[in-house]
Image (cartoon, rainbow, N blue to C red):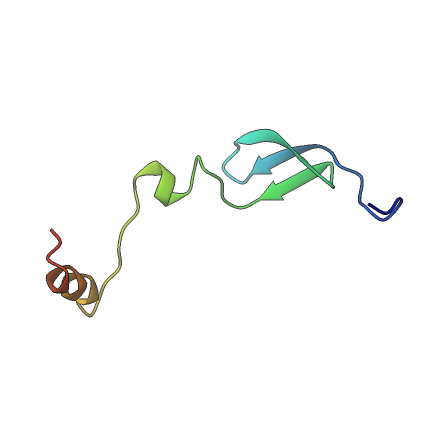
Amino acid sequence: MKKDIHPVYMDCKVTCACGNSFETRSNVEEMKIDICNECHPFFTGSQKIVDATGRVEKFKAKYNLK
Protein backbone atom coordinates (compact mmCIF):
# COMPACT_ATOMS: atom_id res chain seq x y z
CA MET A 1 0.00 0.00 0.00
CA LYS A 2 1.13 3.52 -0.67
CA LYS A 3 2.04 5.67 2.31
CA ASP A 4 0.34 8.96 3.22
CA ILE A 5 -2.73 8.54 0.99
CA HIS A 6 -5.10 6.87 3.45
CA PRO A 7 -7.28 8.82 5.91
CA VAL A 8 -6.67 8.59 9.63
CA TYR A 9 -8.90 5.91 11.18
CA MET A 10 -10.08 6.82 14.71
CA ASP A 11 -12.82 6.20 17.28
CA CYS A 12 -16.08 7.94 16.36
CA LYS A 13 -19.03 8.84 18.58
CA VAL A 14 -22.33 8.53 16.69
CA THR A 15 -25.36 10.39 18.07
CA CYS A 16 -28.88 9.85 16.73
CA ALA A 17 -31.73 12.36 16.74
CA CYS A 18 -33.65 10.04 19.11
CA GLY A 19 -30.89 10.42 21.72
CA ASN A 20 -29.21 7.05 21.25
CA SER A 21 -25.44 7.13 20.95
CA PHE A 22 -22.77 4.54 20.31
CA GLU A 23 -19.12 4.30 19.35
CA THR A 24 -17.63 2.98 16.14
CA ARG A 25 -14.56 3.68 14.04
CA SER A 26 -14.42 6.13 11.14
CA ASN A 27 -12.30 8.86 9.64
CA VAL A 28 -14.26 11.54 11.56
CA GLU A 29 -14.45 12.01 15.34
CA GLU A 30 -18.20 12.65 15.63
CA MET A 31 -21.32 11.95 13.55
CA LYS A 32 -24.91 13.09 13.98
CA ILE A 33 -27.48 10.89 12.26
CA ASP A 34 -31.25 11.12 11.80
CA ILE A 35 -32.20 7.49 12.35
CA CYS A 36 -30.57 4.47 14.00
CA ASN A 37 -31.40 0.87 14.88
CA GLU A 38 -33.19 1.99 18.07
CA CYS A 39 -35.71 4.23 16.28
CA HIS A 40 -35.94 2.79 12.74
CA PRO A 41 -39.38 1.18 12.09
CA PHE A 42 -37.84 -1.99 10.64
CA PHE A 43 -35.92 -2.73 13.84
CA THR A 44 -38.61 -1.57 16.29
CA GLY A 45 -41.36 -3.70 14.75
CA SER A 46 -43.60 -0.74 13.90
CA GLN A 47 -43.03 -1.09 10.16
CA LYS A 48 -46.14 -0.63 8.05
CA ILE A 49 -46.55 -1.56 4.41
CA VAL A 50 -48.30 1.22 2.52
CA ASP A 51 -50.19 -0.35 -0.37
CA ALA A 52 -52.89 1.67 -2.07
CA THR A 53 -53.25 -0.39 -5.22
CA GLY A 54 -53.25 -3.96 -3.85
CA ARG A 55 -49.81 -4.90 -5.14
CA VAL A 56 -48.85 -6.76 -1.97
CA GLU A 57 -51.98 -8.91 -2.11
CA LYS A 58 -51.43 -9.55 -5.81
CA PHE A 59 -47.85 -10.68 -5.12
CA LYS A 60 -48.94 -12.94 -2.27
CA ALA A 61 -51.68 -14.50 -4.41
CA LYS A 62 -49.28 -15.07 -7.30
CA TYR A 63 -46.81 -17.00 -5.14
CA ASN A 64 -49.34 -18.54 -2.72
CA LEU A 65 -47.99 -16.71 0.30
CA LYS A 66 -50.04 -16.01 3.41
